[in-house]
Image (cartoon, rainbow, N blue to C red; front, side, top):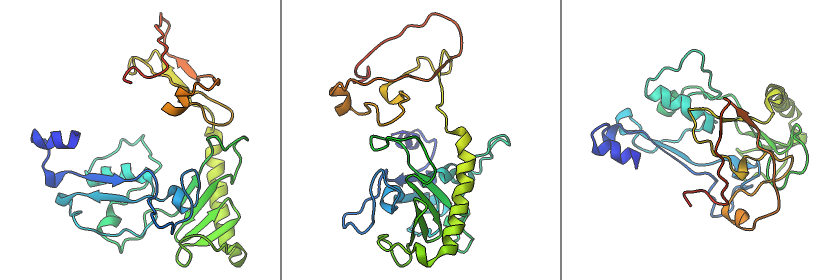
Length: 253
């Protein structure tokens, strides 16, 4: 792979390579965690993540108890590599580089909100609280109504919302601010056509903008030739003659 090639040509030493491993889904062979893919219980959005960097002091196992998310990886790796971002670039994530070296440092992230809306099971427009989870410390607020404390209920079986109205209010306030901030941007994003930085432009069925449900997105659904179609949202960057090639499967396949 790229990392091994860099070591072979002497660009980087094995000790000075930062390796990050994480899984796309939670691995729970005994079923102790509630939820799975396409849910917002712990099994739907919590995954293992490991960072290994011997030269940077990250070579043996250490647990980081704080709340973190995928969007924190970029700021963290930049911090570890001592790379400064341009001032006009403001990432959504927060670096936890200091936390993985010293557990006594306060958690880098105050809270995290996960929300899912998409796929075959969704047959209505986006709306607040739908398939959402507000995470803060040990608390998990599901869909704005269910409350779980992971310290005593890691499998999320005991809804204690009625016992902690003050926590419900706090977490709902966090969500309301989140929804207000993302709502103006919940519009389809156009794909550039005629941009010299992306030539050719590849459009596939998964790029269709459908009001509900999933387009054909894997080989099984494509091979079934489901009679469904949808529009692409494109932005043509320049006038000219364009050659269009249609394929059922990618050229590489």
